[in-house]
Amino acid sequence: GNGTISNLVPKCALWNTAMLYASCPSWLIRLLLRGGCCLQSRRLPMNCLKSVSGTRHVNNYLLDSFAILRFIQKEPGDEPVKAILEEVRTGKACAMLNVINMGEVIYTVQRRFGLQFKLDVVMNINRLGIVILPVPNDLVFRAAELKARFAMSYADTFAVASALEHDATLVTGDPEFRQVEHLVKILWI
Image (cartoon, rainbow, N blue to C red; front, side, top):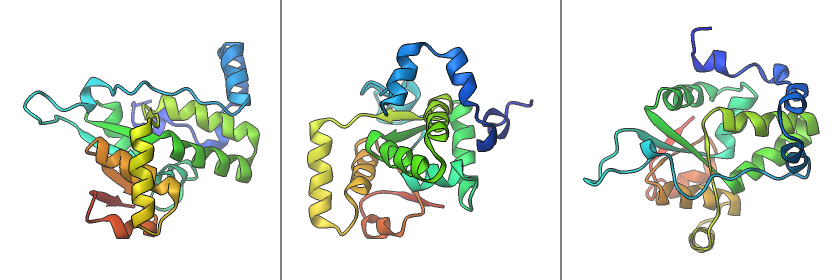
C-alpha cells in the first residue's frame, strides 16, 4: 500500500481476532479478555510535549469517544479523525484518548458488536498511535469540578479536563460540549 491511514487501518469487519491469538502473548490476551487495557505512562511522546520555549511543533488532539466511534464505524464525521490519525502517523500530531473515554468506546462496541470486535478495537487503538491517558487523582478532581459546573456526562468531563491539561484540541461531535467551548478549543466533526 501507499502508507496512508486508510491502508493502515483495515475495514472494521476485517480486523482479525484470530491474528490477536496467533501473535500476542497469553498474558496480554488474558488481560484483554478480563476487560483490561494497557495504559501509557503519564509521559507523552516527545512530539506531544512543549519545548523549553513553550511552543510545540505538532498539534495535540484529545479524541472523545464520539470521534473514535464515528471513525470505527465509518460514520459521517470520520474524515477529520482519519486526517488527524494520518498526521499522527507522519509525526505532525499527537492524538490522545483518556482511559475513561476508552472505557466508553469499549462498552459501546461490545454492546453493539460483541466481545470479539471489542478485542479487535482495543488492539487497533494502540496500533493507530493513539496515546491512552491515565486518570491521576488531580484529573479526577478537575473532572468533578467540571461536572459540578456543567450539565454534561461525567465521562465527558474527563475529556475536557484532559484536553485542558495537555493543551489539546478536543475532537467531538457531541453537542454536550457546546457549553464548554469557552474553556477548550473544539474541532467539531
